[in-house]
Image 1 (cartoon, rainbow, N blue to C red):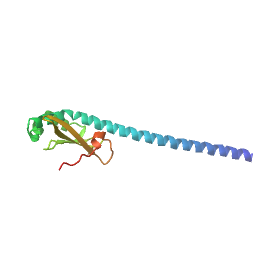
Image 2 (tube, helix red, strand yellow; image 1 turned 90 degrees about the vertical axis):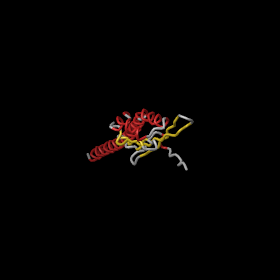
Image 3 (spheres, rainbow, N blue to C red; image 1 turned 45 degrees about the vertical axis):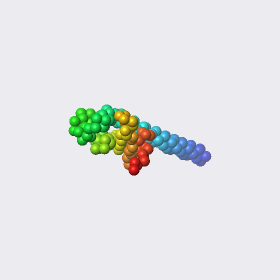
Length: 149
């Protein structure tokens, strides 16, 4: 009888241990997958927000090639005004030197897009940015450009 009681207690303890270890492993895997999905979701949101800025980049390029002021573009651009009220962005502006500064709502990333003249009338856009929370920027935006002297 005593041996039977110990055997039942050992089986109970073994069952409890296996259950606890299984629970810990499943919890750890769930946490890992959840974090990776969250990073993916923020990265996708950031890329989408950058794509939405494409028409504004085109307007800035046209303004620069026509040698008009950026202040005038801010005042009359319907695309700029529409994007400023878009819930996709916490903050959006065009600086006087034609840089576009955007704070993306979902990923909390700050993005700075900088036009650079190539040739006579075409522009290349450099990107940089970041945040305190995540590094969910596209690879091109993670590179910090050298300061021009």
